[in-house]
Length: 130
Image 1 (tube, rainbow, N blue to C red):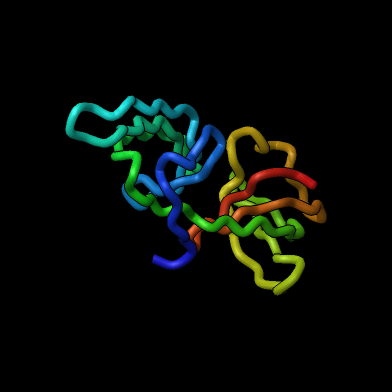
Image 2 (cartoon, rainbow, N blue to C red; image 1 turned 90 degrees about the vertical axis):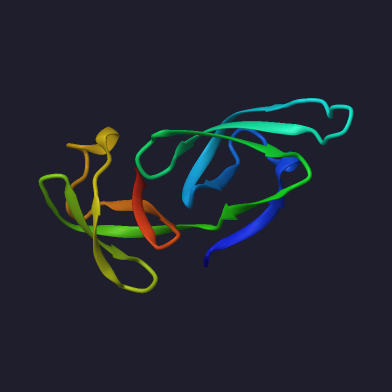
């Protein structure tokens, strides 16, 4: 899988990004249990998907490594808006593509605006108005 790096589970904290079931997520809450008589510490991770905001949970041994998505935050200009889809152009590569307008930005996106989008594992997500 491209666009990932590995990090130790115990080094994660709320606000970190991780992959759970190949879905990029943001850690909301993390609990680390003490090691048992024969085992390692366990990390209980509560996260939400960056794509559709669904909740994900996982429990992992503290000594394991986990994949972390590499997120490209880029600027773009809005070319046109139709329903809940915006056609935007990357300000560096001049590539144009359609992105879904998230619920919190509906009605506020107009042609000619500068926006910030995230490229997460090949999926582009509109994040904010510049």
